[in-house]
Image: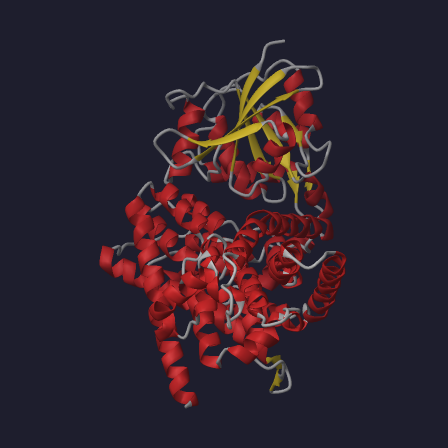
Length: 611
């Protein structure tokens, strides 16, 4: 049985990559196509009958009439026009079974190529759960190609596709009447092979009357976002306190088992004072993702993009920028990478340059630490939590600043033009608890890998720099003042003094360049080693900061983290996606300049008002 070379194609968000992962597992490699920044995913697997298969996961595309770098690569591979890339023996077109009205159009485009293909109806479990009935034999007969059902997230969800690949390779579809209007053909296919439940359509219409209303829709969107940030403080507090108690108890227990010396200091002042402080914010991060994942699963997010298209166009962006910018609330790196779906190169560059201003989850530990230390935990008007209001304000500040920066980029680069938004609006559905659980587990795993990887490494390195060399005989200051880290902090202090930063903050900013969360761990380590005796060792960082810093300093640092590009990985991805160190340099310079200017105004104005 000869080896097979297949390519997975489909619209974005059809589950194509999940199917690729299901087929290949760990037997895959990722690189960029030569000369472009579009990602190339290739993998290997064997069918149950032992047939070797090489599979290529092509970028998502809405059409083979390419209007973006992603679609251009997909079109070139499908046509066999990409140098160095073998022509696929079979095209596997993956379609979302819950939204065939959109996805069948692309399948018909692929069919017109006249190449051997299989149509994989993915997410069939969700289609059945929503009452959608698909007559697979009728659809197969009408299209003249094999049609199989898949559920990429389940262990045996690709069995039908594997069985199809074990049979004789699919042949090219017979030429037919497929050169007419694609929309009319889709309607005919839906009428013959797909039965949609009336209740789903009626419910969608009723909800859209409100959620897509030009006024009430924006009010509802603002209320949803407001509720989300209120909940981060109000609901996560008990879980955070419990986790902090466990971490503190574990640190004290382990420290008590060790003799006085460097090892005990490393465990208590380095690992548990630094790393433990970051881990305490896991409940808040997961609660934020509960909301984001639920909104995504419900089908609401594309509607939010539709609502925001008009105001975003006024700022030089389009609704297409919404999804990359929303992704940046989790992390700016996938947000920057998601801009590949934006057709206009100038719109794409503008979105890349403002994506770091979105408040990523890595900022949340810094925000939560400072808000918890300096903002009273009290109600406003008997309904709202003041800490949640401040957090909401920080997110709004990032969004407003991103829109302002995009408007400036538009004016500087003269990027005026007409933008048309074509967007998929899926049916509403209740989020699946299993999918939410898997999503939260993935987010928790990512967080813990960062904590036990880069954050742990930098925390240990900072502990070493803050502990050595030892203070000279007769020293009167805490030992950290004489260490390498202390000397660096005192050297930087004059530069940051106008914005209210002391030398301890200056030390924390340096390792915080690798990952924003490290700043919290760094502050905990620095203050633990600044204690004049063991009884002052850090157990809770917030009370110590509240006693040592002014409100002006705390607000200045909060504002700094709204703007500062404290993430070298994001800058590296900007360079990779733009293929230009100059653009990465622009982003770095303008973000640091914004951070310093905004912090300077905040600190000086707050200090003046409090004097």
